[in-house]
Length: 417
Image (cartoon, rainbow, N blue to C red; front, side):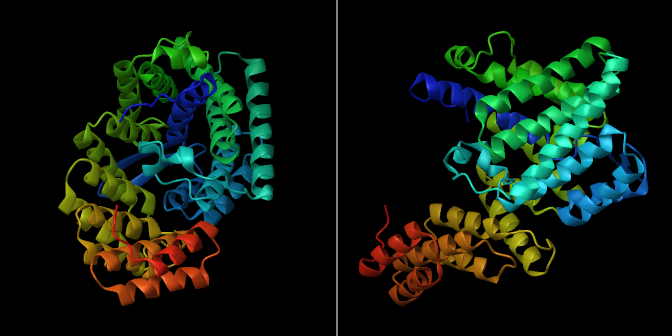
């Protein structure tokens, strides 16, 4: 899966920035200063600062228990008010709680250009205001430390993380592509400077590696359009740097594994990507997104029976309350889409219907599942069931496009494309 080029100079600029922002987003999908390792059959998290509140906060963060994680990070920040690391932790918790609310943490959105077509959702103004205030505070602390010692790699790294999170906020919430690119380049410059001071600072290799890979993937017109000609990218060098960050068990180790899995999937190196996503899903079994990403990679790699089983397991785990208030509806949709591609109409309908049984369903996703189930029942020759699903969409959905389509299908059975 390569980066696509669209017509028009403006779209070239947009495509180049999108590619870079996707990389930054995945570099911060997991806490940027957390070390994870197995020890005596027990999962141990080492954090900075190494207090109980921060450690518990990250455990909850990885389980996508954002509200509880935020409270832990607030407690840690109260104890360390002048340390930029706790500020970044809290910033990350608030930011990713909002991204989760907006449905923007599904890795499959970034394996293709699906994210391009997502409608800009109205963000929570209080969450955005808090994110901006935390960014301002983190930069204030980091810049003060760097004013005293410009070669302070710890402060440079903290600022790199802050700039990366700001780039994610600007892109994924605001869709402010040029602004996000500037923030991302600032994060890159800090990480590059760290490596000039200390070549063994493994965490800084992550963002430098991301930029090498992404810029190395871009055709020359896209580099020129986005003014990225000064960064001499190399996909192989980028992957090697990200792998080094992943293997070093440094503070960005888990982030690097997440990013590396994405890029390897885009390179269709599925076995290596699956190894990484399996580690993430097994290490953090309460995180629905990691499990969903693994199931999607199994599908993309051609392991269809394994993918079907993985989606079914996610659905069963969700029914059992495994994922708390996480919206697990995408597992039902993705399973239905997979069975639909195999022309197993009845099984696909059942998969779409399973969205009804999951806790905390998104209303639009549920309406889409009902519409898709109706189409499958039509193809299976079960018109009565199809009509029932379309009528439910008309009655309950607030999405005009879905209601319009349901009315069309009530008048004329779905025949397929």
